[in-house]
Image (tube, rainbow, N blue to C red):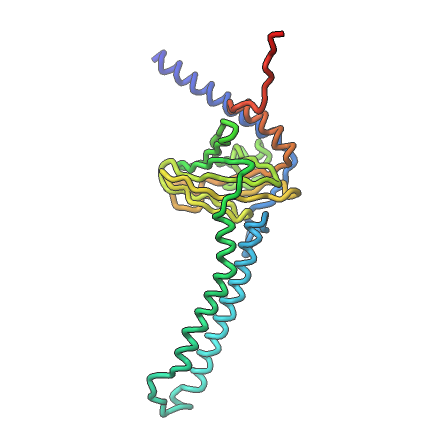
Length: 289
């Protein structure tokens, strides 16, 4: 009994220490506004942040124009057929079975449309898949049901859990951010290439940040990469979600990313390394003189 009480007390002390350290590290970032979040009743995409997201938005708009034109054209054909070739107007229909020019047209025109789409979509795909040298590399691991973030170059990591309603104000959020905000956030500097290495610890998860145009499945046993760059001047808080059905609490593992200036990131990194027992950025070696 005493042993169990001692273990429980030790575990509680460790959790309290880690929680306090995490709060201290996150407290070094203040004054950020929410920039990437869903809007009640909204129907469009979140504003694009970075060149990857901007390219995706352009491609989305281009495809919308193309499919709208095709849909209107097909609708017009249906109307023409209904009006001109119904039984009352055309009681004696033609009985031919082939029309070579028409058959060539409905084969060649779709090919031209697909080639046109490919000419714009493939460069966007290649930009996503050609991972640049990362200024900051973060390993993102999906768990049932929370996210873990490991700053691989700095030797520390932490877990990120969804905040409950009674915890939001304590962490600087409003009730509008329920189901979006987490107790700790992935912190990144603006103006730098961020490489995320995504995996899953148990089942398949998916790390999705709409504002950055990043969505990557986290598959157990595999390490996949995506990248993004938040331009300077776009500092703020961005929200995402797991978008791969991963179990009963799939809806309760949101993503919070805080984009800050390089100076603020350096300050946060120092406090985070102390809070999460990371590798020191620098240290002085005492001389023997």
